Length: 75
Image (cartoon, rainbow, N blue to C red; front, top):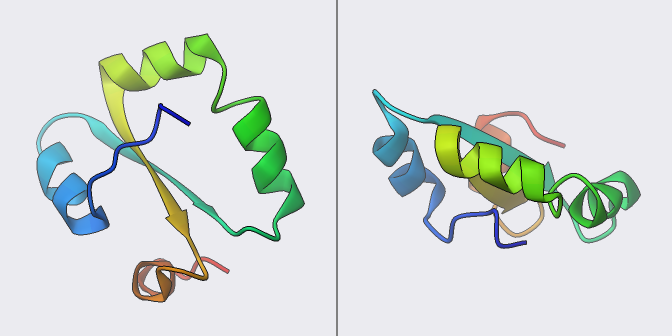
């Protein structure tokens, strides 16, 4: 979804220090609820507008980025 930044996790964390919140969606290709959120929550224009004004959103695939997932105990 266009709501998510393309920055790396560490770059986004640095960019949000002292300012906007960092909202992270941990997901996986096999996660049904994650796919539902991509179709509903993350594609909602109201959510996108809120993120633009108040936060930076990142999408982290727990299978592709194990280091970040492990750092935050995301399974």
